[in-house]
Length: 89
Image 1 (cartoon, rainbow, N blue to C red):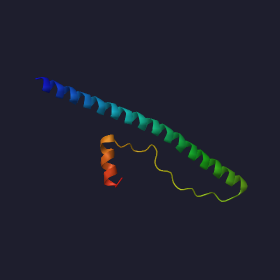
Image 2: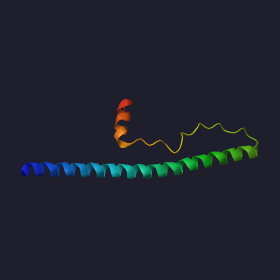
Image 3: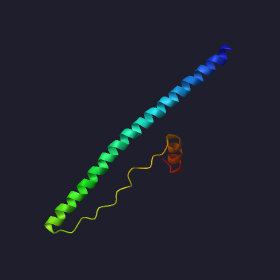
Image 4: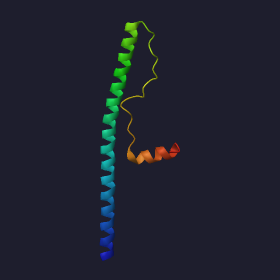
């Protein structure tokens, strides 16, 4: 009976660690998304300012590469490992 209780305690502890890891990963993803949103907004703003200055000077507008879609599609942590292994990452 004692070994069953020890095993159950181990499983509970492993599950708690797993949940804590997932919560930490989600929190980090939210923070990263917030930072990326600020960078995305600032990049669009810089592009518009650049075009404004070019138009005022009568210069041709700079052809900037397209930005990736935002907000980015979130990949759940369980699928993230699968996606990186499929792409060789």
